[in-house]
Structure formats: structure tokens, C-alpha cells
Image 1 (tube, rainbow, N blue to C red):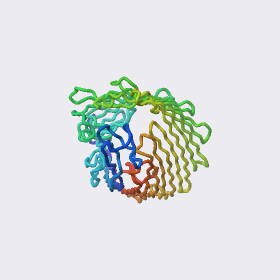
Image 2 (cartoon, rainbow, N blue to C red):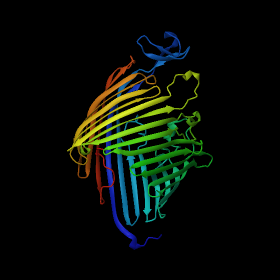
Image 3 (tube, one colour):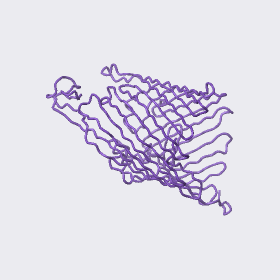
Image 4 (tube, rainbow, N blue to C red):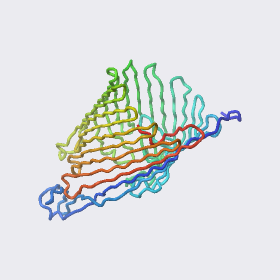
Length: 472
């Protein structure tokens, strides 16, 4: 299609710029040791005179991990999100840039001072859309970014077909697999970039169902190897007030399902909703990493959830739980007695009226070798969109054999946000007390955390990017 001067539309842009800074304290874990001959007892696990549990290697050393000094760490991010319309109908550009100037080197990825989460140009007509540049994509296989092009066709009745391809990026990194981010983390990181090719098909099935299908393949750019090849399918069915969702992900390379689930939800009686889900999950690893060779253990999970709305919606109560049964690890007799199941439960109560709100929750989870119990409470008042002040408190307890020792965390703080025209401010401060049991050489301590953010919207078009300071 050739654009004529008469195809011109209105010019404009909409943008948000924001700066967010955080400051918190942490305490590194150090390593200490003694010659094995100086530690009484036998076997790999022994105790020092003060009760510290140590790990010993015969005729070498016994090692343990005492606490180190408290350090203060700062994290600063700067974001620019913008959309542009140059005046040609259907033509637009969007960009989201993030910088990390001012962050401590300790913080992960702080040396990646500038990155583009997405940056693309698109042209859209009634039946199709063409897009080129760095793109974000969410489908049945999860969340992916890539540098390339995509073509969406919606000219068929009830069906949308989206083809895409280009240079693939390491998942969640916005960087090639050959970049320093993977090289620093894995000794056997890929030495060649990847190419991605995929297709998404979405459509309606009759009057009560929708469906989606995805095929995605990633190979080395020199075509000497395969990184990943997967397919996903989703079906949603609506029967009266009953909703049924079916989903499955299949790894073509490993010839196994990574995930398969069926979820049923419906209102039970007025004001009461219920959901039940059956899920099968096996971790997915790309073919370049050695971790997939260790036959990751999968699990079967049953989940349930109930919600009640009372007092005209001013009060909402939620409760739910899940049970998991893990596969046999086939790891040998030395792991006899290892737990092969786990459970979790939660409850939540929310009240909101005339700007005031109270939100409390409690959760409990036990699994193989680790457990956690805890709750949160926040009380505050809203003063309109993007304006609120809230006090919050939290407490949690971690324990079981795979932990370094029992830990109890309790604390509280204040959160606030205020929006004035095109400016939005947000901030918070909290103090936590970390207490330890069964760790004589790890002392209790207080941890401070603070954050502040400011954003400014400008442009000739309405405020389209998301704003900070909004309380969910």
C-alpha cells in the first residue's frame, strides 16, 4: 500500500518520565572454617561447642557461614515511556527505555546502565498490522522479547494470525544469550546469538468458546544447534455462568509437557465465587544449558479458592489452598525420607469505604525441607486517584532443614502517593527486625528500607502510559 498525502492524520505524542530510588540494608554471609580434626564428632554434619551446625570434609575442614557486616545498598532506575504519531494515519512508534545510573555495583544488572525494554515502529490498517523493532510478546509460552518484525492478520472472520521472527533475546534479560549477563552466571553460556520464529493463532470457536495456539522455535544464528522448540494451546469455554479454561505447553525437543491444567470457576450463590484447578507442571530448560540433563522433577497440584463480597462490595473475603505431589527424584537411597509433597493455604480480608481501607492477609506453606508462615496488614486512606497514605505491618517465619536456621521477620512502615495534575509522587519507609534461632553465630539485627519515586506526564495526547502512585 502506498500512502498519499491525503492519508495524513493528526500528529501527537504521549510520554511518561519517571525516577525511582531505593535504599536498603543487607548483611552479607561470610564463610569460616576449622580443621576437621579440631571439631568433635563424626560424619559430615557436626556441632561446635556453642551449637553452630557445621559441614565437615574428612581430613580437611569443617565450614559454616556466620553473619557479616551490615551494608547499605542503593538502587536507582530512570524510565522513559513514549508513543509517537507522525501524522500518517496508522503509523506510530513506541519506546520504553530504562537506565540504572546511580545504582550500587552490588545490585544485579547495575552495570547494564541503559536498556530498551521495547522500541518499535508499527503501521496498522483495518485487516492487518506490521511492526518492526524490539518487541514484547506474551502468549501461552510466557513472556518473550526479540528484535525483529511481526505481521498480524485479522481479515478472517473470528480468527487472528500473528507471524513473528528475528533475533531472539535471553528470556527476562532484554539481551542476547551471548551477552555478559549469561556469561557471568554460567560457565557454559552460549557463544552464538539466536534466531526466533513463531506463530500465534487466536479465534472464537462457536459462540461460547475461544482458543489460542502458539508455535515457537529458537535456533543458533549459525544454524548448528537448537535452543528451544515449543508449542502451547489454550481453550476457554463459557457455559451459562460456568467458565472452563484448558491450557497446555509442550516441549517438542524433550517430547514432554511442561504444563497442563484445567480450571473451572463460577459464582456459587450471589456474592460468592469459587475456583478449582488441576495442574501438572515440569520445569523447562533450554537445550544450551546443562540443567535439563538432570531430569527436573515435576509435580501435580490441586488448587481451590473462594471469595465472598459483603455489604454491597465494601467487604471482600478470600480463602484458598493448594496441595502438591512431587515425582520420585530417583536420586538414590541416601535421600530416603525426603518429603515428596507440600501444601499451602491463604486467607485475606479487605474493607473499603469512603476512602478508608483495611487489607489483611495470612499465608502458610510447607514443602520439601522448607516452611514459611506469615501475614500482612495495611490500614490507610485514599484521597482520590493516585493519592493515599497507608500504614503497614508484616511478620513471617521460615524454618525446616533446608534453611540455615529458623528466622523470624517482623516490621512495619508507611507508604504514600500523591498525584497533582501531571506529576505523581510515591514513597515509603519500613523497619524490619530479623531474629534467628539455632544460629549462635548469626546475630539479630534491624533492617531499614526506603524508597521514593517521581513521574511526570507530558504530550499532546491523553495520558496513555501507566502511572506510578496508583494503589491496586
